[in-house]
Image (cartoon, rainbow, N blue to C red; front, top):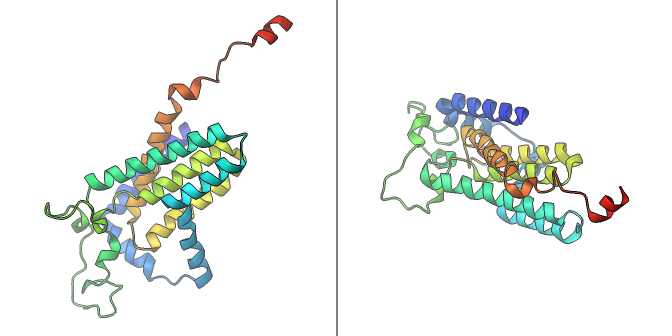
Length: 226
C-alpha cells in the first residue's frame, strides 16, 4: 500500500509539473528519430492497452488456465472498471489531442512552419465549444484510457501471475510511451492515468469478495482429525 501510494503521489506531482509544457514535450518527443524496428515494437505494444487486445489476452488466458479462472475473471472486471472510469473522465474533461496541432503554423512538426508564429500555450488545449460533439475523439485526450487500461492489465495479471510482475510493468510502460509517440496524449494525460488506476485498485482491494478467503473456518474433516 505504501509503495503504491508513493507511486500515485509522484506521478500526480509529475503530471502537475508537466502541464504548462505538455504541448512542447509532445512535439519534442515526436521530433526525435526512433529506429524503425524499435518504433514498430513500441506501436505493437498498444495491444496491451487496446480494448480488443485486452479482450484477446484475457480470453486466451481464461481458455487455457482453468486453475486461475476465478482470479482471471476478477482481473478482467478490474481492467474493465479502470477503462470505464478513464473514459468517463474523458467526456467530462474535454482536451484537444496533441496531434490536432501538428499542422498549425507555429508547430515544430509542420513542414511549412512559420518561424515568426508564436507557439501556442498548453493551456489552450483545455475545454471545447458546447456545440462540439461529445463523440468527437479529437477532444478526448484527458486522461489516457489506454494507459489506465495498460496499468490495470499489469496490476490484474500480477495478481494472477506474481512472477510476471516486471514483464507486465514493462509492457504497460511501453504501451503508455506509445500514446505519447503517437501524438494521442500529452505526458500529463498519461501520468494522471496511473493514480486513477491505483485508486480503483485500492477500492477493489477492500471489496468484501476479496476478503472471503482470508479467514475461513476449518473444514469438518480437519476439525475431526484435530
